[in-house]
Length: 271
Image (cartoon, rainbow, N blue to C red):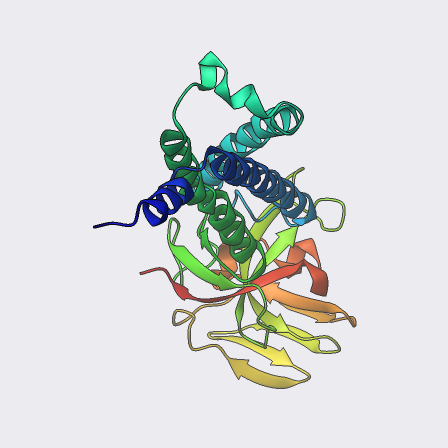
């Protein structure tokens, strides 16, 4: 025979409205803070993205994460309105609009537990996209035959560029002789390091002379040549060119690239 007192204790532990109310209040507060903080972090990251990579390197990701964060912000605003009311008037959630037994309310907040992970993942994805690794679509013919228009390339933001690496450059009209009046990302090959003497000679084959040492670029087509050029790379700058030398707007015209404007090193093609 079941002990009546033990049964009542277990029943009360499982069906304690005061305890359930406290749990719901805590979850309401914590989930509101999660949605609010992820929204703040998202907009903070977006403001700190001086190169405006997010949204240009992956428009699909940018669009859907923006929707997620907007919904998260709306939820947090609703939570910020409801939370203080619930704390001041605990029976507010028993109003007709919120009328439901505690099991249903607990189920609702359990669903919110899962939903709250979505904006956290969104912010993490944005951070990775801006500061660690991202995918960028090649636009134009300046890197042919290495990369063609429409190719998607993988870019590492933390990798230190070396000579002959393919890099992505943030070209702003206030710093460069740009073809455009607005900020753009260019994909180019890094040829000259700080302090180098760069000399380009037009012969039957295209050679780059770096500090008077000829380098034959075997990634270029045969019998490839361009105009003559000579220049000295200043400290804190790089000399970049497109592989399609006759159809590339690069350091020969726009000037040397500042170190801080190299936003990533291309490590390969997506897929």
